[in-house]
Image (cartoon, rainbow, N blue to C red):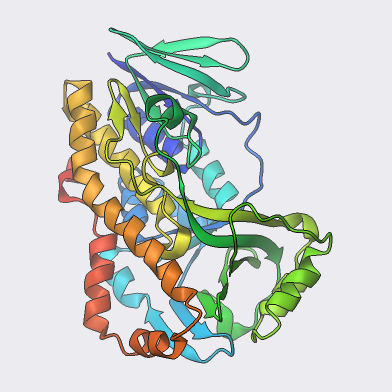
Length: 385
């Protein structure tokens, strides 16, 4: 039996591990972190991801860890509705709505479905060597491992990608993001929903998680690499978003300082090949998108299931990698493009009235066509693992 190494114990890597174990494929997951800590922000698991989770038997556990969203809304900074979406149609058609869940909780759920001995922590990758028969990986502690193939599931700043395709840099979106998590009792009107407020080159979004936890994010147009210059980041954000109504200020005020983290928003649009030899990339390591469509995690889940399906039913590893890439490339390219431009349009400095008009009066059938194309998973993945 051929053996695989999975680099990365995040959503992509653990989904691949669960699917490989069910498919009877041998593997080991190597994760750089010394332990799986309960940190991180919120994440959306859209209907396409939930369909995959259903197939591999983890759907109910994911549902129990998060909240199914009933509504998605976009307003201006004064809470005047620009665009709203009732998720009931999507739930009827695809079996689930969007599930908002804490990233760390999701990771723990997925980890619980993998045999413990298959996941080795505290293994930071140093090098990947694709020899004629085997692929060898070396870690920072000096240990090595080898297998018939390697799956790079080590997210946006992938070390696996740096070894096989070092010439492809990330693209900066011209936007930076502060993220926070807080335990807070929202008023009834915001329950089971996610909301974004769009201002002038500013956005604020929030979604309810389980146990009264609220994930929020604040996005601003900014040069790359800009650092916060004040120790009182909450005061800074309250000033930046002073024109925003609704629960914006109460959420920022209620969040402990250590729970607010800033990251610039990047994507990876230029990588056309996801594998070289017997090394293959999945998820953000292959095709990172900005978070504006809420599809980064979902596309990683789709990747993991699709790739393992190909490895299960295709005898040649490199052909399996190629078939996987050809199946998935068109969809993720549209996700990257669409997500990037949603971010650009959301931060228009001028013509905001025109933008809001077209968003408000977009026919529902057009939106449904677009969402269906995102939430429908490829029919070739209907094979039983």
